[in-house]
Every structure is written in C-alpha cells, then in structure tokens.
Image (cartoon, rainbow, N blue to C red; front, side, top):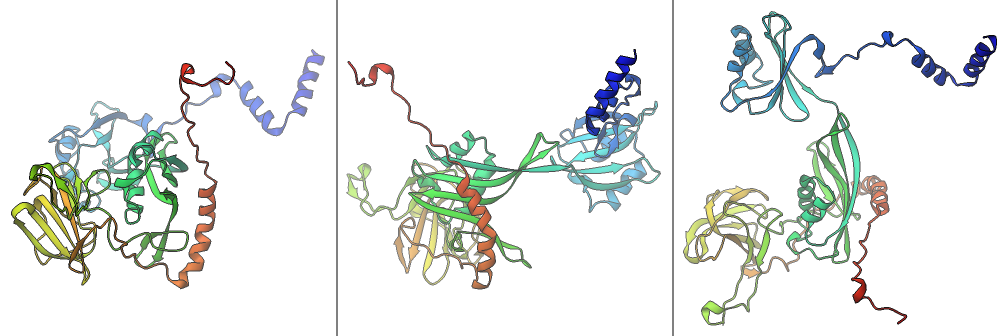
Length: 427
C-alpha cells in the first residue's frame, strides 16, 4: 500500500500545475458537477417556460401580448413611451422568443422580437411598469480570402466558391465604372479580402465590406482599396494602387449587374426584316425582365420624360454641356422633366413600349450632340486622392496589397482525354 501511494505522489510531482488541476477535476466525485446555466439574450432560461415562434400573418403586437396575459396598461405604455425604440404598428413576420412564468398563470414575462439575425428588441414586463430596449447578439468576424478565374461569369464563379451573393454585388459595384461585367472574358482573374460574420461561431450572419480586391481584366490588373477622404462627411471611395479613383463620372450600364448585353451600338447593322438594308443601331441594348429598375448612369437634369414613336416611353438626361443619355422602351417612367437625378437613382422600369421584340432598355449616349458608343468612350474619371492624403493612403494600402499578392490563385488543370484518344510514345 505504501508503494502504491509513493507512485501516486511521484506522478503528481512530475505533472505540471495545469495537468494537476485537470487530474483533480477528473478525480472529483460526479455529484459535485453543477449543471450549466443556459442563457439566451441575457436571460436564464431555466427560470421560465420558453416559447419559440414566429409572428403570424395579420397578427398584431397587442393581440399577441393580451393572449399571453400581459396587462393592457403595459401594452399602452410600450406603444406610447417606446415608439422610438420600436414601432409596434410595424411588426413584421419575424421570429420571437417568449419567456413565460412557470406558475399556473403562465403569463408572459419577457418578449424578445428578433429584428434580424443580429439585432433584437426586448420587452420586459416583469416589473409593475414595462420597459423596452434594443440589443445585439455577439457576432464574430472572420476574415476570408477568395481567389478565382472566370469561366462563364462572375456570379457563377463566386457561387462555386461558396461566396455570399451580396459579395458578388459589392464587387461588381466597386468596379462598375472600370469593368463592363457584361463583357468579361474567360480567364479573367480576381482576388478579394472581406469579413464573414458568425453568431456563436457557426450561424452565418452576413458579410462585411470588401477590404481589398484585385481584378485582372484582359490581362490588366486593377486593384481596389477603400479609403475615407473626408472623415467629417464620411465619404468613402475605392482607389487603385496609384491613388486613382475607380469611380467614373458615368456607370457602364443603366441596369445593375446580372443582365445580358443583347445588342451593341452598330452603324452598319443589317436586318432581314427590312431586306438586309443598313439600319444603324445607335443604342446599346440590355435585355432584362419587365419591371427591372433602370438607373441614371450619371448625375444630371431630366430634359425629356415622354412617349414618342418607336422609342416608346423614355427618359433623356442632360449631364453637362458635353454629355447626355437616353433610356428607351420603358414600362413606366419614375421621373419628370426638370428633375435633378443622382447617379444610380431609379428613373424607370424595363418594358416593351415602342418598336421592340422583347423586354430591354436601349441606352443611348450623346457626346457634343452626336450619338456615340458608350462602351468605346474613354469616360472621365472622378478626382484622385489629394496630394496631402496620398502618403497616408499608400502606407494604408501597403499591407493590404501585399496580402492580396500573396493569395494563391489555383489554376485548374486541363481535363485529360479518354485513354483511347491519347497518343502513346511507344507503340
């Protein structure tokens, strides 16, 4: 027996402090282990009857609370005193958690409305007076690096990489002024860095803004780095590695990324319907479903919003003394003559009015009073970063550029032909 205890003592001396602590925990009687307290939204769920449900169609906050035995004066107080926190008239069909008392009354003590995956609103009825407040679930941001090569289109490539579709939209909007995403080429490459957000390390809760990107189009690499040039107004733009603004005066297309370029500007176009006579096409057509929003490609003043002949319903915008744009075949216009519109504003919706064989917007572009091909025009760029900020900008992007350059781009190997089709060196 003495030899046994001597061996145990020698073992305890050899192990580290951490190992001794773990050993003691393992040797403790099982009865001393306490049951962990289950908390959710800051409440101990063991103290309540817990109901998980979703707001039904037509269900109101008042009806739901009355059904769960909340006093009417408390409901009125929430409605009147906390309308800036939460407008109960605009309750949506969202999930909620109801914490009810464990006694026979089973009255609601706490109502937790989940505004979205991260934000929630708590209505606490436990005291004689009710109160409400907003909260946020703990969210962890995990940086992700992505790289790919275009085979068909950007959306499909990123989807195959398991990237949130919103990241595809973000990337297309960053490069909207410099790259025509309707005309990507097979073999174009991209790299990007952004954050993914998770609740409890597992529940996906959306993406953060793109921290840095590189898009190689037709062999030309174009970097993109976000930078705030005016901290008071919080003006953020994306700039390339030389501090040039990626934003142009004009967007490349009058509809957002995701639709098809169906017909280009062509002064020598011939159409069978007209006996193959030359019928110049001075617009650029973008096919899209009826009702797709049409956006202004630059700031300007609406000079026409009407319907005329083969143009159907259309809007024309004068941007300055040099440039004007026109958007044809609309289902309906949203703006009127004389209105000032900003770049990206919705000015109408895709339709089939006028002479058209299918739903699309015909985009026409004037320069000095003459219609030109917008896809061939070298459009004016926005102002670059001021010289006073350039040194700070270059220092800011240096580690980001290095990180982008180090992201490995895996080039897929060509598929091997079947053995019977392969040439053999030795007959």
